[in-house]
View 1 (cartoon, helix red, strand yellow):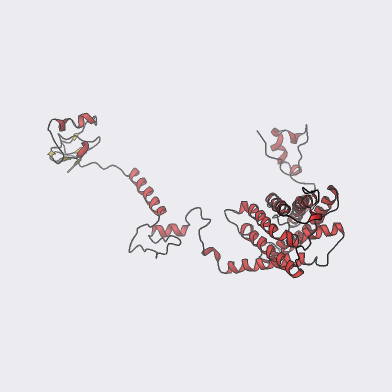
View 2: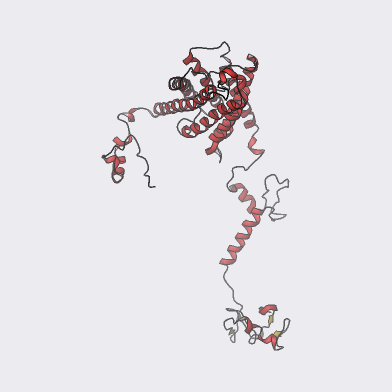
Length: 410
């Protein structure tokens, strides 16, 4: 299937227009009209970037919570085998797993999509944590915070409008959970989620591109634990939106704000703690595609020490022996390359030097042995010896014949 790259800028490929013809695309993209919305070049870059991030975060939060809340609505209202809904008979493991999957998968997909636009945070508590560790400026954080709250309200309104029946996705305490217990449950579960985001997304490494998968799985595990006891909020926007749509706020609604934000602060504190201790040195070289320049210099000087080897570095004055397979492989490859480029130095020849004929067959080489002729260990003159191609010897130089037809000049 031949698919062309999308048009750049504000141009739209309408039928029977220049934009729809791939042959005219380069000419169209070269024009300033196609690359910019009219008068957009007069908007400062900072304002434009903040606006783009706000739009991405608003749409991303709306989509994330729409699919998550829609899954919760289905799980709470689908009839069981007895004909009763979960609201009538209470929670069951299948319902809890359905809700957890809805939240985890929705976050993984939408965070992966919007990661390039706004970072794919979708959670005011995560935004607070990113600001604390310095990964997000506070001005951008405030703007994203507001966008996420609006996205939560929009998602709840869409679910209430599109699905029949009352909206049954509010977060409430259940299973005899007290307010204090609910507060700490929300705090610890949010801390786990936020710390996962710090290590997979805020820390740049070789696996950053699949960070949304790990983040989605983290939310899935947290929802499995928290849905039954607190509703599994972990996100103020998730709890605030349905309350606004239903126009009903429980007396303990505040725990869905304080708990996640406290959890974010705890995660940020632990993250900064291990950064101060330079946690990278505890398990080094996890993302090293090849040896660093320092390691290569140490190898050249014979002072390279393999990580976690427990052996002292070897100085060039004592030994240049390699102790790792990688060192051995590099040295072997280097020696092989030197042998290939080494010029062949012939043996100094006299005036009566004889150039040997081309190498014969194996039967010819061993013909003398079958007749009781020259055996291994016997000497003969250079003129009578069978020589390898290109070998030059002088008169009086003895050629010692080895086993299997080989010979060398002695």
